[in-house]
Image (cartoon, rainbow, N blue to C red; front, side, top):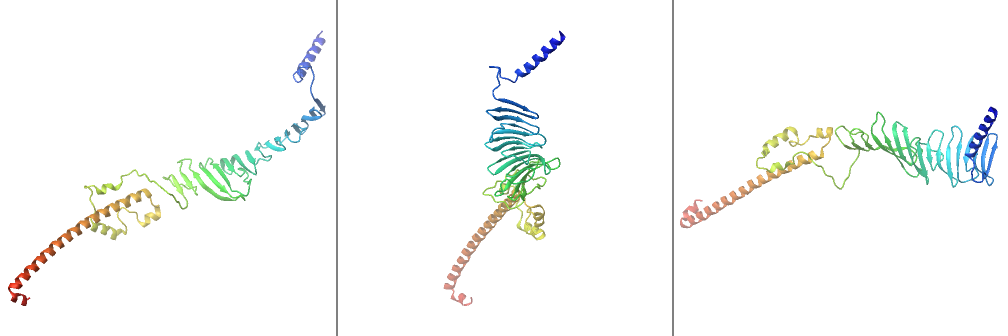
Length: 320
């Protein structure tokens, strides 16, 4: 009895396992199931739709354009459509879209160019490259330049944008840098001096620039309580220092550069002071002209009086 129960148990288990993989309708399997040693295949109309051997497994093996393949070991898993590789995962874990040989963690290739992403490499924690393999530096299309964005590492906490030529050589490794600590921006330089938010290594041209100052604009120069320095005081300062008061010296400019906002403010103050000097000199000149006119009138009057006297007393004119 025990032997019979054991036999029925094994038979039912096998049937249930078989039933999980066979169509229940009609109790038949459409297509062919082949087992030949280490080779296993499922066929339909004489062509393999799945094949598994000792080294590889292929879905769609009977087709030449659309199939999924996997080669055992340190080899890629691939999906092909229309005779082209659409998705590949190689043995190192790199993922390729549109390419069977990804050189970075993720490589997307199409129409002769591509984009790539790599997590760690070349001293950075994450890179994004255009027309370039992030990990290897290979250029997709040498007729164009390549750009790469690099996230800093434990030591370098900055973000870098780099430019490469079609041959792969660096055109500018520091085209743009964003400081990860201060958010300062560097153009054509990775050096952003402390206390500054924007650094440019090179010439700058702009159609417009606004500098917003936090200090007082020097309109206070025109207020009545402002004490205008005398020109003699200004001259003494110039003779001693060879530059105007409050203006930076040549040595300071060479050493520290020029603060545009501050220099414009100081220059405006000097222009306003100069305007006051001119107004004062204009008043002095006007007063002098008035005095000259008054004195000329007095002289003209004295001349007329002298003429009258000489008419009545000719001998006075003879002794002149």
